[in-house]
Length: 444
Image (spheres, rainbow, N blue to C red):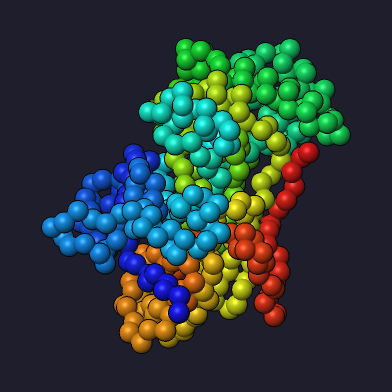
């Protein structure tokens, strides 16, 4: 009989970036407090679950309190094929291919993009202190609360409106560049429109700090006056909010170029390589390829690599696709992005309800976000009590049973390797809505 490694409970890492929510206002802090003390004065931005060296998880069930913790990565490497499954171990060279996170966002993150694999290798070789690994970082965010983000360039006609109605942008880019963009048609080939959009965005982002400061000041002054005689648009109100958080930053101006996305709980946004984005506020579960590569160009005190960002972007235009999840049964919805490395299940259980999570051919990570109950491993008679902040790493071929206890709903999220890698696509559950997205309107 095959010896299948047992699931392990994890101790996870946090990142205290200054944009995170403070103390117990942060879901990240609440999750972290399950196994660690928290500082009520500190921001708790990201809860990391995985093997990335910038925030590695360790095994709670192995090692003692006075010994060096056993890292999840080290434990996997002892028997990668058995822990990850043969196909996953072979494809990703014995490492966990995804990084699972929870984010608590109090103020805007940087305007950023993540490089594709080819560029990631080049950046890592050139500047390893900033670009700390050679992997790409496609990602997906699932809203736990209302979640606001900037993502992707607005459509052609909307950007024309921006260029004609925001005088500060017009002054920074110049009439010649704007004239070229105004001549673009929706039917023009993508390669042609990309060149023009790249030229005006690069011109904007390359503006001197002194000129940016003057333009942001003019924008703030104008909008404050106009707000007394008309209702500002959402984008204008956002620009004023960003200016308060990051005064004199080019990100305040460039926010007009991007789609302003507002997710409600349960909606998800996936972001591929070379797509600009910035999370604004709210809390989410996030999954990505195992990488921490970020190219930044605004809304940040950190290193800005404007030239790299402007040269790498795909410059696709249109509103991003919003995933709603595919119901597998009454308790489980699956979010399947177009990336091999990961998928995410949302498991929702009313008091007393149970659900079995069948064995799969790759590894899974389970995190309890709300509620309490129990977890039972395959073929075992004993159950472990679970509560908010508990995290389990489940090796390949393990079946798991989750049961909700207490009086409230139990919410658990599972990350795993994308099922399509194993030639499995979830079927529509009887009586369920098969719709998996809200909007797919993308120019070109």
